[in-house]
Length: 173
Image 1: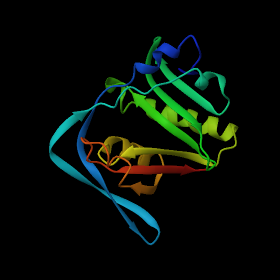
Image 2: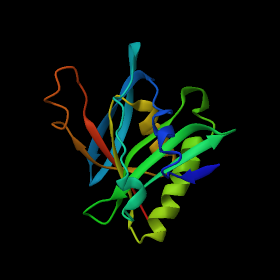
Image 3: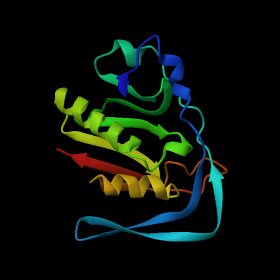
Image 4: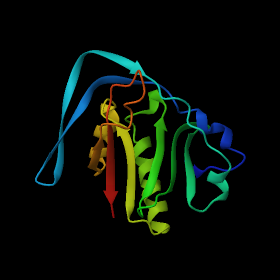
């Protein structure tokens, strides 16, 4: 069951944030105005967890922001956090699914809910950013008809432990 976040279930927002395996990286290429990519696999995969995403009451009160939570048996196993962006797209700020529920359709269901919300609010599509080392996320977006719109080599360059590029994915209606 997917429900919109409210003041009563807001505490469930942090539950799906778990680590993922970094098994390689996406190698984007740009030719003839089209982005493509290959996957480079690492010989020694490692685990990574993103810092806790903050969510505040504005995601309940403001029409231009929303969070949807995915529940099974009253347990929150997934989330998607979105807001309007200056370019007419709905920006997916975060999407997360618990480890044991990945690859079971939860993320796809959350994306479908995001598409529905974005269309109802007259956005031209969805956009998001993820890192080239989050191969599973990149492959998930590609499988769901997102395309690479740009690559940013500087976004994470000031972080001492980050050796990654930002990849911006788009789904245009």
